[in-house]
Length: 275
Image (cartoon, rainbow, N blue to C red; front, side):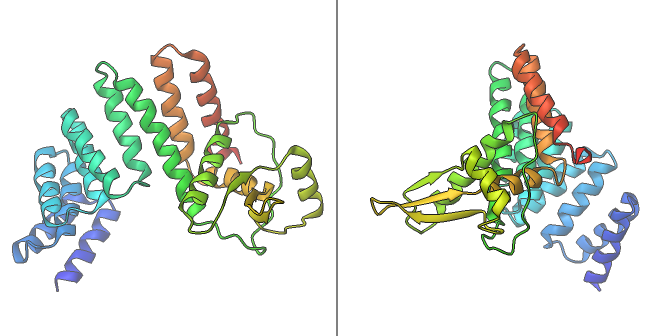
């Protein structure tokens, strides 16, 4: 019975009928107050209905019941942000990141809070966290890459901005540093190598290849297909574009106009609609 009630309430939430969903969540809580996810969804309903105080109560209760769910910390931080309780919001977002270091939304929300608070060095902190969010996104991308010849072969496409290359290089370094294999060095294709690879498709769908050099050390060469695939992965949704746009806005507020223009141009180029 409880499960069917929760499912019915979730359907109402999907239709944005938050008051009706909240009535059901209250019924469930009255029957059994131990469901952390019900407190979480009730808190979300209160938030969308504009009752921020009750949203905080419900989300805090959810945290008490299960303190390792990043979306709950994110939701709580957003409500604190709406209440302009900046320190509480920052702490909630940091707890989300501590629980899941790859939680991009938490980095973005943390940086936004620091921008809104705008005390002393908060702009610098916001810049750092937007950058950390982009690195978290890069980690997400490379973690799901499977290095085999069946991968699609993507071709080079000129991009005006080159900020994305920094995150592609970071992701490659991150992967190599976390693997148990013996990778002694990383290498990147020259322009000539990339052209030849795309012409011959020698390595088919591979993203990288490991070779032993004359000194007996293993060198991982990341192929052009890795960079092309990484680039297109950034274009799949608005996350990367949003991070770059927000970072550009911080640079603008700091009167660093060249950096601001560079990030805003990158955001424009990597909007999904620009494919």
